[in-house]
Image (cartoon, rainbow, N blue to C red; front, side, top):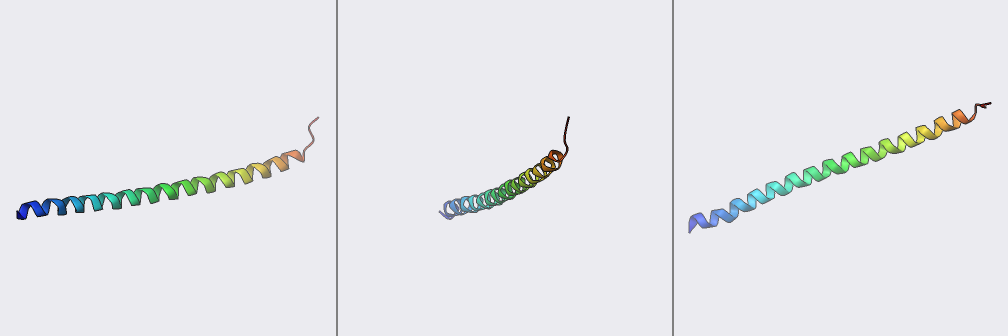
Length: 60
């Protein structure tokens, strides 16, 4: 009977550890997505600036 009560406890510990790992992974993914968004926004600003500068030149 004592062995039977430890099995659910061990499963609970294993599940809790897995949940913590999943949460950490989700946080890393979220951080990476935010960074990609920041880089994309900066690239867009740089492209717009470059386009304005190029537009100043007259091509004949």
